[in-house]
Length: 287
Ligand SMILES: NC(=O)c1ccc[n+]([C@@H]2O[C@H](COP(=O)([O-])OP(=O)(O)OC[C@H]3O[C@@H](n4cnc5c(N)ncnc54)[C@H](O)[C@@H]3O)[C@@H](O)[C@H]2O)c1
Image (cartoon, protein in one colour):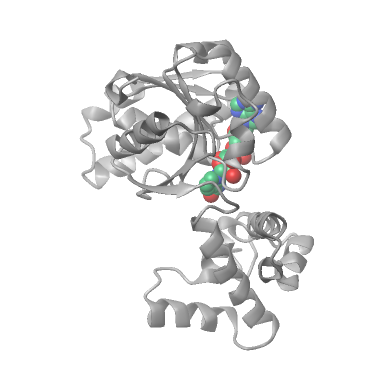
């Protein structure tokens, strides 16, 4: 299928990533079937999308007149059967293999044979996910960054089985969304988390060993290395539990002790200090 043959996209999961992915497809002119398990998740997602579109209007990225047309391209559904009309589907359900297995299996049965199935997984092997479907050559990783409407990178991950055609089409599709796709082969953590997580982990070790305080570690990286956010601020934003989960994937998948999660990170998670979302991590967000 040529990239211009793609008119309708299904997004499976309307959470943090799903609503952002749906937003960028609809803004680029695609019809979007947004699927979640309950209506209240869809309502929440459409509310977030509305607010984010307003923000884009204020920034001049979109005109006020465009907004209703973008919203009209959405079809929020709880009925999975509705995704059968999609030419391309992106899965963004929780990072649990059992949930992915069930959702991808169902999507694979419902979608037309020529449709492409992509996963936004941040750490599960795309090769293993492709093998769960009857279309492994039409399966690809499409790793968007949070917040999706703002961040330009998409890591396009080629599973062992991904065909050249599927891969090239996905790269082109990401460009049509105004994103910058980067080609990456399937390996634990891809490039983004393979490079980022050891940085965050080492920053946590610096705090644990008393080398410097969190603001001092972040200040070094911001003013010395030109990072827009310090690694510990970023860890709080991502969620310390998510960081530990990804480090565990790197550790298990690559078998190298350098990826061992810092005990301080694990302790923070055990205490429920998960970062911004829980009000406390390396920093306090209570005010
Ligand atoms: N949050 C991030 O910063 C980030 C960044 C890159 C990639 N990812 C990846 O994106 C995926 C989604 O993460 P998220 O942060 O958006 O999670 P989330 O928990 O915010 O959203 C997941 C959504 O999927 C829905 N869901 C659950 N089962 C479903 C099903 N059977 N069918 C349809 N929807 C279902 C949930 O109700 C929820 O709304 C994960 O694979 C994650 O690793 C996350």
